[in-house]
Image 1 (cartoon, one colour):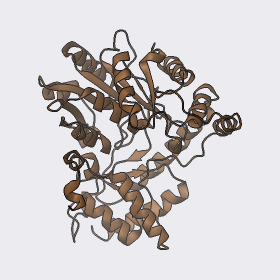
Image 2 (cartoon, one colour):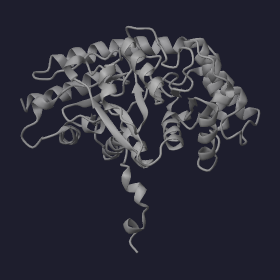
Image 3 (cartoon, rainbow, N blue to C red):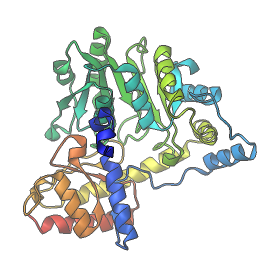
Image 4 (cartoon, rainbow, N blue to C red):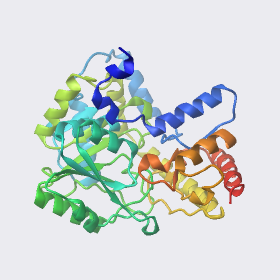
Length: 394
């Protein structure tokens, strides 16, 4: 029997991560000797803070290298709860927290624990690439809510309300947004939360970029009284502390949900890496200066990138209010063999050796995602190449 015929049907419901595919293609070209500028990876270029690295070394020295509890150590879970309380005034207990192998694992675990075939999940567009696939894998249905680029991809409560049906189980919210950098209006978010609570619908708030807001104070949708039966927090240390490779994420939610995720985790990954857990404790408890340093640099890069993009003929872009991505509309260059964002990204990589993620991965077809989590030198080189590539087609 051929391998393709032997695969489980559910595997056909998910696709290879577009961001990972672009990264692999760029890496292949580098190995072939090409000078590639990589704007695809959503990964801080800053090193992990020294105090965090020292905590990991100390863990190894003290032989903290064995299994831990499946859902993470009690110390780390309590530290996560304490940090969220310190930042946002919430009151989670360690029984309402599970530590996962990165933020993506957190979202996978909560969707698998909550969704049954036929359930519906409301997802604003543009959306992070993984949302669609984890919902599909659970046998549930994605209900996409289109936002307007001219309105800055902002979300209104009425847009969500119109998409709700008796089958709606979860609403996904991600602010600041990956890929657009949009920060949703707090008043509209509060209305969405109120509607969800009144109708018994879960709201998953993806707080991966929660500390990276340029013009507003960080906030959490979980802040407020009596929201534990409505709001589920999916979080990560990857971006905030430049700890992408350490793979530490978490879920904050009702104890029964945490128990359910723990069951799945016990038969899949088991516990997150013991050493990384010790590093995470130090990241959350230790000095927070590095977060402000990164945010200030991201703001400088944002201003440079947006200025360059707006100067390109026919290119339009919104100003990101958070995260570290620009999401320009490059459809002006859709001609001469380019009909969509995927073809644009493929030709850009092949001709100019610049890696970007096509907008179709995020639910739109006119855009590309540019990560400015890289040096100013690389931003200048890459944008020069993008400008040349577009100018040749306008």
